[in-house]
Amino acid sequence: MIFTERILAHRERIQSIQEGRFPYPVFAILHFSYACNQKCKGCAYAGWNNGYMMEEKDAFRIVKSLFTYGIKNFEFCGGGEPAMLPYLPKLVEYIAMRGGYYGILTNGALLQGKLAKILAKTASYIRISVETGDREKYKEYKGTNDFDTVKENVLNLLAIRDKDTQISLKFNRLTEDGECDYGEFAGLDVDSYQCKRIIREGSPKTDYPKIQKCYLNQLHTVIDAYGDVYICCYYYERKETHKIGNILETPFYLIWGSDTHKKALKNIDTSICRRYDCRFLKYHKVIDDISKRGRIDFL
Image 1 (cartoon, rainbow, N blue to C red):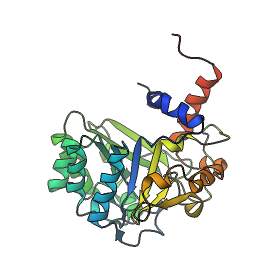
Image 2 (cartoon, one colour):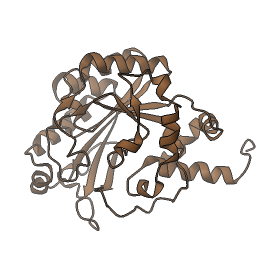
Image 3 (cartoon, rainbow, N blue to C red):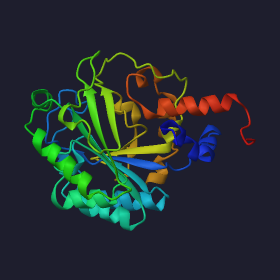
């Protein structure tokens, strides 16, 4: 299946959203860590990473509650570095035991020992942000000497992973008009290489299609280390307008579809959205193209 066409698997849920209803999201993005072991120059969360991490009891409480709403797909990312969560091995094992699925976005430097073995066998995907395959540029960009460690960790994961665990490597164009440098990471048996541009506040807009209204964000929810719930994973420039509640203070069913949620959706500035590498902009084009064709029940 072409990447963007995966959105068609959720056609009925999307139709429900278009009709003004609020079905519970398909997946949850969990930013449970505002601690990081690297100091990347392009980090959108650099000003937020104060070392705070959600407590284990609260993390389990949240995941357990989301399962009760039929949400069983989770992505651990940041924020900070999710592999710094000391309870992450137990939490992902719990998700897998419950019949759930998860992926992780990580810098890869801590993917060793028990954590590496669990992720390699039970994760749906592991995306490692390498950023550059050049040693010196890596050190300059990341502020660490983790190049060899990350490379060794990637090779180990490739050797021990389950056949259903996808591993991808993300690289950045370190200049606005530059190309990604895979360097010593080129030619590995990974499932994909991703080449992105660095997004900072004030970055020029991408060439993604312009949209009038974003409604596909309702397919996911985002929860950070404090339990704050956001309408979108690209909230870092719009924290106050994108926050819709706190799941440690208010049950999720009272947050989702609330007046605060509706107001936040109404006030989304889609011109800002186009600065980001937003998956939903690509998905919107697929849905909008289909909608223009009228009924699609006939093949």
